[in-house]
Length: 389
Image 1 (cartoon, one colour):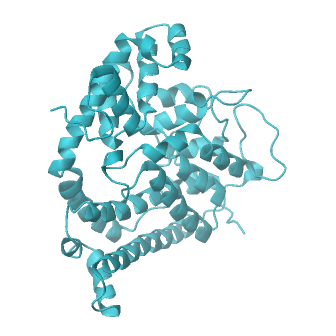
Image 2 (image 1 turned 45 degrees about the vertical axis):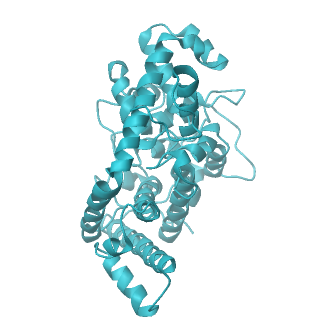
C-alpha cells in the first residue's frame, strides 16, 4: 500500500517520445530495467569510487556502490510507503555520469571543459540517458519517464542558475522543474547514496590499511557500535568485530533517516507528491545530531583516506591522464572511434567538438582510459599502476 505522497505510475507525466506502455510492468519498472541494460551502467563495473580500478578486487566500484545504494533506497522507500521501482531507478542511475578515476577525473574534466560550459556528473547522467545511449530505433537515449529524469537531475535538491550546459540543453526541450525539490523517492535515492558511501568508505579505508580499527572505534556513532559488539561478543575475531560494528553503523543511519522522514512528512501533512516538491526543504535527510556526527566522520575520512599520501600521488597521475587525453582528441578527432567521428563531422564549432570529446572521455572506464593513454601517448599500460611523475 503506497502512501498518498508516493509517486503513482498511473499518474506519471509520460515520456518525451510517446510509447505504448508495457502490459506487465509499470512505467517506473520499465525505466529501472532500461537503466540496468544500458551500456553506461555496465561500464560502472570498471569505474572506481576512491581507489583506481586495478588497485584491488575488494574495493568498491561505481557498480557495486550503485547496487548498494539501490538496496538501501528500496528498504527506506518500502518502509515509508513510497514507490520502490522509481526509487530504485533513480538510485541505479545516480552515478551514470561519473568519469573514470572518480571525483579526481571529474575535477580534471571540469577544468578542461571550463571554456566550453564545464562538466557536471549529474548533468552528464541526464545526457547519457537522453542522448548518448543509442540503441533504440525510435529515439536517442532511454526515453525515461519525467519522474525518473527529474529524480536523476535534482535528487540532491533544486538546481539553480547557471545550469550545467548538459542539463540546460535537455531542460529546454523537456521542463524538469529544476527550481523545486524532487519527489520523495528521489530524495530517498540521494540519502541512500550518503548512507552507502559513509559505510563503505570506512570499510574500504580499513581494507587499504589507511587507518586502524582502534581509530575508527573512537569516532562518533562508531564508538557505541564497537562497544555494543564487544559487550555481546567478547573476544570476537578482528574481521568479524569490525564487520559487526560497521553493519550496526549502517543500521543507525538507515533508522535515523526513517525516523526523521516520518516526522517531517507529518509536519507538512503531505497528501500528494506536489507537496513534497514544494515543501521548501528536503523531507528525507539525517537528523541534525546524526548529521553533525557524520561531519566528524567525513573530516576523518578526508584527512586519512581521500588525502592519504598514496591516494594523492595516484590522483596526480590519473589527472595527468585526463589532462593529456583531452587535448590529444581535440587535436586529433580522427582518432576517436568510428561512431564518434560521425558526430565530429557534424559539429558546427569548437565548443561542439569539445563536448563530443568530453562525452567520450567521461564514458571511459579506469582501465580503458589508462590503455588509451598508453596507446596514444606512451603512458604505462593499465596492467600496472601508472608512473608518469
